[in-house]
Image (spheres, rainbow over the protein chains, first blue to last red):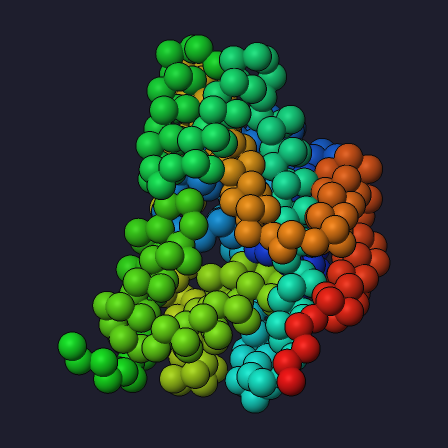
Length: 173
Length: 184
């Protein structure tokens, strides 16, 4: 019970800090579930992230999977609720204001100011994930090649995940 | 071409966001645009840009914020709940089924290999996402400095996110204010 409350409370707080979505939060989630509470290893964290990427749907599902790993299906549900609840409430109320302040210069200023913060957070997450997921030259090479192809081409990311899974199945990474 | 916009019923809201949730791999925002603007014509292009801007500026999962804004525009609280429910239902069921399979077969060596490969590729996709965002960054010194400082603070120094945001977000917004375009 206390675990479920902790998940709900912590992810509710994270919800309001997720500038740029769930992918910006990974270092903070890692600290919470791996470093502070020891609910899983860094490798398991990376594996759960991989499963979330390989499934259809929004990025936020990684939070559902982490909740599942900690406390089963109830854990998944409270974590997802926590992650989506407070920010959804905020969107609900701000959506009206946003339309009213269409002409205000502040809207553009806030968007421009938050853009570099979001980029820093996403690259911070990328750094953390890369260190958790890669443990040898072959896996770093796969990670780097995937990044390059995904950055420079319009290829559906599912192909890249499929290629990674295949190489892993063959025992090459 | 018929350009009139259509007001969705609650069932249509659910069905529309259900289709977005089910078909999006590695990011659902482009699909949301196709569904909302091109296929079902609930929003004009300008309205979509507006809703998307809101979804990205506010904290939380962007697509969930978009679903809340679109759902509530047409049917208030129940519309928002319907849209988010439609969006999350199928992906949640799928991902939890995958998780249970993973829990069951975790110790099979081949599966460990598959997950290791998936994890490396998945990390690469996040790197690419960061690089694509960085490409679109304004070419100004302060933008680069804020992005780097955020990266180092959360990635290397591992400072708590709340503290980082409380310092850097107001600073970045203040810098954006100083460099805003002044329209006459």
